[in-house]
Image 1 (spheres, rainbow, N blue to C red):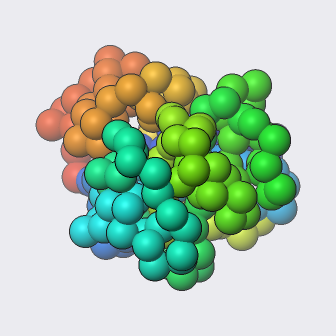
Image 2 (cartoon, rainbow, N blue to C red):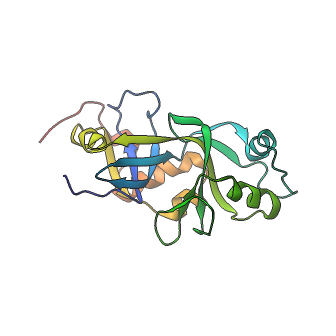
Length: 186
């Protein structure tokens, strides 16, 4: 399992994963290497919308359909920092290109563009992220804490948050009710 690369995959929290940050979480893995992994929880909206967030950071939001977009709890690391998962990748100051169509940006310029022009329009804005040190995610996978499945941008950007986890699980041909809360090892 040393050479596994889960970049551009979903992690589906197993019922045995008792960490309250990750219970019933769908994590989109933005980067995975021998140095560790970084992901964003994409199914946990918080009690804030995009208009409220932009107001807090003094970015004007032009009238448009994005003001009511939810802001998400992206994970327990750097909760005071915003991250924007977006399609297309674009050309922002601090963007990690995850694949040919999806990027993760942590610089203010992408939010300024969203506020002024509504672009990129396909976005998931989070506060915080999920991070794993070198080998930590692999250890959690070996303990049956996560299921993995290749990600689909349509699940991220075309479905409401409550439908993302079931849609990712459907790619595996299962539903959450079929998962046991008792870990087993073959």
